[in-house]
Length: 238
Image 1 (spheres, rainbow, N blue to C red):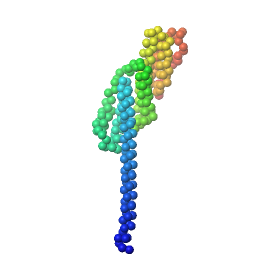
Image 2: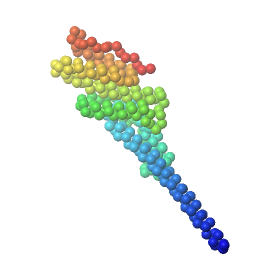
Image 3: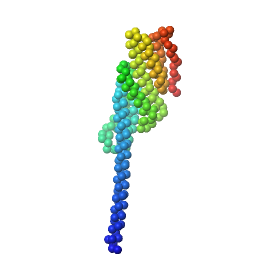
Image 4: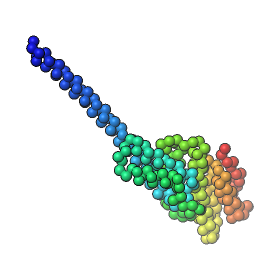
């Protein structure tokens, strides 16, 4: 057998092995790229969702702890993107913007919760608050909050929700009282009490709102006309 005849099978085998190795490398690279794209897409979806939610809740004075928790999660997600895709468009500006919001989330309004009279607008805001509460309660954030921070976030969101309800139902109560529709007005306060008492966690502010509704009931309806109402205040959550 000539040298050429001996080497030819070895060359063919070498080419097959090389092809298999290159194919395996290409496949692993494609898998790596797909995994990287998946991570970036998940981060983008969560960021866009949080930004939309924050924009829809702009009329409300969300507590500082809530604002910082949202800003921190958005920053965490941009940092994750930077680790897997450094050439992400406009990444430096987006990171700087997220860091600035975390350092000073004062873009949100402060002061009293506005009076929302329209039922549809109220329902939309309550839904958004509920989604945000579920996000933090169910650990949807990239990095889990510490137990005490999660408690503060959920407490502030519950207070904001109940402030909205209280403003809405007290306003309708006053309008009905002024129109002489005392039974309908009382029904507004009773429904408010039911909603307030279904909220968790129980904070001192929620107990104040509950007491204000009870006081309004007592002042508006003579005791002889009113059905019994449980006036025992709830204890704050430990």
